[in-house]
Length: 153
Image (tube, rainbow, N blue to C red; front, side, top):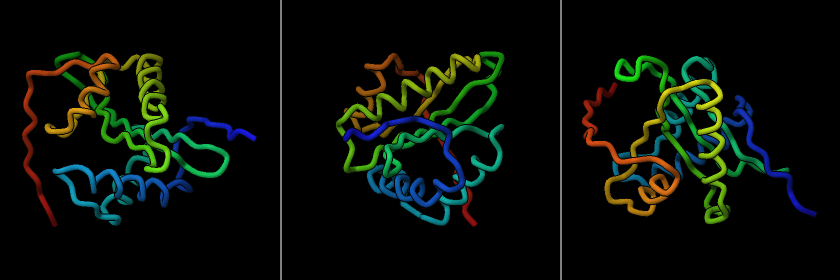
């Protein structure tokens, strides 16, 4: 019997599994330290207000397999609404099976259907496999350099 794979909007009921996916993702990224409380707070902020963004999940009949997070913002350069692709993560037991591509394809279709003008993302500078993943799917490198200033409580 083959599991039914589907992509759908995340719900509050998905929160515990979404937090676990982000903890796993941030453990792999150089700039971030996993923090379940912060990850849960961030996810709730998005799930509570769809105008802030969308989280789509890929699931089978038994569990949540992956997620993609799209934040909505405005670009004065583009003259309209754009998306910031924040998180793409597939559960470690399901990597290498094309699920990341399925999530990204879904996000691009969503962006086109809703008339967003651009998707921007950041990937770890040293992660050539991640960079290649996005370049192979139509993203291009920008001459912009990300800078940031953190404010902690």
